[in-house]
Image 1 (cartoon, rainbow, N blue to C red):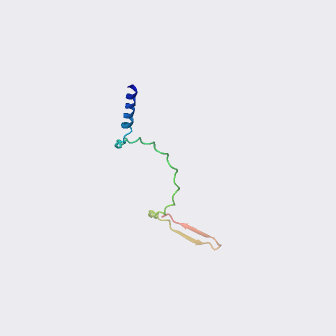
Image 2: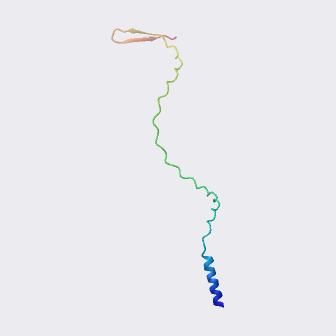
Length: 87
C-alpha cells in the first residue's frame, strides 16, 4: 500500500508538474534614475586668436600756444644770427 501510494504520488507530480509553461509575466516597473556623476576636469586652453584690426585715429589735440616772432640775419661769414622778440 505504501508503494502504491508513493508510486501514485510520483506519477501525479510528474503528470501535473511537467505540464505546459504558463504565460510570461509582465515587465517590472522602471527603476529610479541613477545619481549624477562628478564633473569632468577642465580642458586645455585654446590657441591665441589672430591680432585685431588697427583702431581708428584719435581726435586732434588742442592748438598750441603762439610762437615768438624771430628774424634771421646773415653774418656774411657762413653763419646767421637768429633774433626772437618777447611777444
